[in-house]
Figure 1 (cartoon, rainbow, N blue to C red):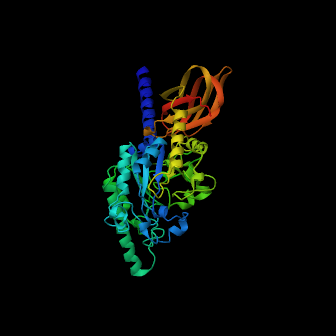
Figure 2: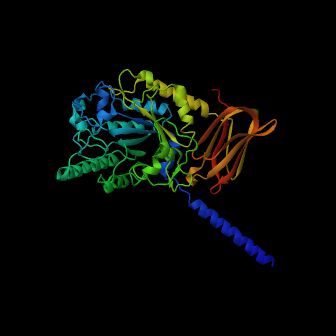
Figure 3: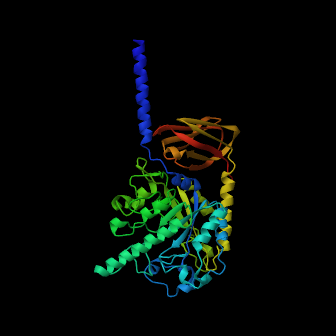
Length: 465
């Protein structure tokens, strides 16, 4: 009888173990490229195009349909991509992205398939390659390079929303021609510059199923460990639903569809992009949100490209810090849009603000009072002595998936345990600021999770704001 009970007990344990493994196995797991992306946390995207040189305010609607009168206005006589990347690194950015092409269709490299490129201009005798300079600067400073490709609009070729104008055979043959150019540019950009962290298609990229170029297969041939963002076949990250540099809480790293735009619009776009902002804890696809904003986006401005006399619209430091807490601290990456000027340099006010931002984040997060990691439903963190705290950072080991569904953070005061925060999503990183409390111990309780919780970091801080 005892042996029978023992066998039954062992069988139940095995079944429970199988169920647990099966449950954990169903969780979306990030690729190495997605892990690299979220570990980077801060990303710079450099916007550079012919519009920087025309002396006019950037007008996106007009620029998408109006070709530049003279592409030889492009003349960055002091171009220094080392200076760009050094400025981004001082802000803490670990990935930097360059607009190799944008809405004019002009390519910032030596293209063999797109004549509207640096081969066509007088600058550097038509031999310049800013993509090459940019990637080399990234590697010099230990920043991972990425490339942004704009093919949805091309004012030079008359492309609007992926399509050529006209009807019948004219439109059909011109569309095929444009598609071949796009595929050729992706082939060049994905094969010439080594390993990339991300390729970003501006406004997405129609695939062959919608009459567009087959960019995904070209990408997959050359960049096996790179973020693809995005078309209606695949998206490795998703837009966070605004250009405010923030996402709400919670913002889950999982999503119900393998792509983030253009399809299922009735679901994705409703309620002011709620699904893009919040994600879905039960989503089958790992696809974390990004939070993007231009550095020159303060006081009513929103400038992705440099314009003269716009220095007053560089975000103040306190605004950037708030962005950080509401992007990186909400399980998202923060992408800052940076704007080199017509000389080919990052403007000094922007460089100064980026350095201040990097130093402030370092000041706040480089010296925790104490830290730990752990596995399971309860993790305790004892402080060296009873002291004040006002900030906590939690991180899951997301290589094993986002597991936590509900958690409580408590602090042990002289009057017993007090609740600091009750939440749902932790993901790559969760940061919470609160009124200072004097405590001797912190307790993290996780009453609900999908599989066993895996915390890579539990840290507490006292930060003078």
